[in-house]
Length: 159
Image (cartoon, rainbow, N blue to C red; front, top):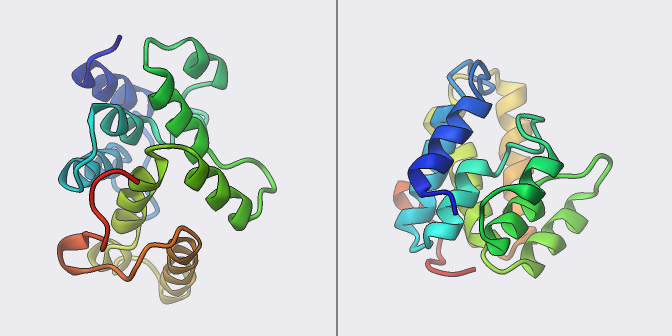
């Protein structure tokens, strides 16, 4: 099995050269989500999934790579659950996350970082408003309460 350090290095390499909506290196988002999972009480499998949560969706790694990777089946299932499908409705996406043990906590950390006001502040107002609404809708579909201080949600531990 890959260690967390190996998963981190792999994710950083897979997303090398990619930037987020604000133009920052994408690896910063992955690191923030992994840390968000850790502080919410997530385990090593969830932290590994946090590092890889966008890899397949962003075509940084393939579904075939994920299937064959030296990762636990649970980590693979969480990454797969968090990978949006083309044309998929948000409610279907949320149902898959809720049906996958450990995925909700990783998505909570992802949403917390995505919705960070400091991160959103650099975006144009229409984009900021659209994303804020999108993230709030997903939080509601996942049954997550309003964000509290320091980006932590109301729930901690296993999703």
